[in-house]
Length: 195
Image (tube, rainbow, N blue to C red; front, top):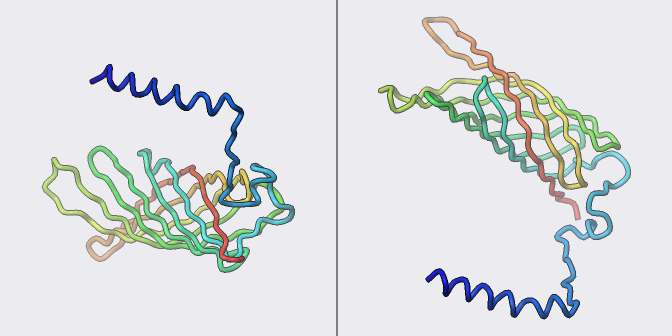
């Protein structure tokens, strides 16, 4: 079986080699036509956030444990974005799922570096590990922080984010507060609604 697979791969490589040797090259067709001129260039002026969707993937740390996250945002104004986040913290004994909704405030600048501030409200669901016979717990979470986007090209940026998360736990007539530091890095992809 292994010999037959090796022979098939060699035959495929031999038939593909003459086409490459003949100098035939396929033209690259870009999904974003502006990339044909400059793949890593930026349009002049402030970053155009208004009427754009953003999708972000990232990884980081929450309270000393690793975390993975997805974010989606819509920018109705150049300085404002509404953002939804889903983050998973797969700690060894108890893992948590965060989901929140917040806003992002920024002043668009004509550079690659774009700072921003963010605040949000959401929920944390903590799932005890298999060793504990306990149910999952849901708590309110407030978050605030900021970050920096480093634009690689007009529709792609590296995102660095630092937030504080405050978990509110009602207990015996009072509310206990647990604070966590949340750091993440990832990529954000922008898509425009304008034609």
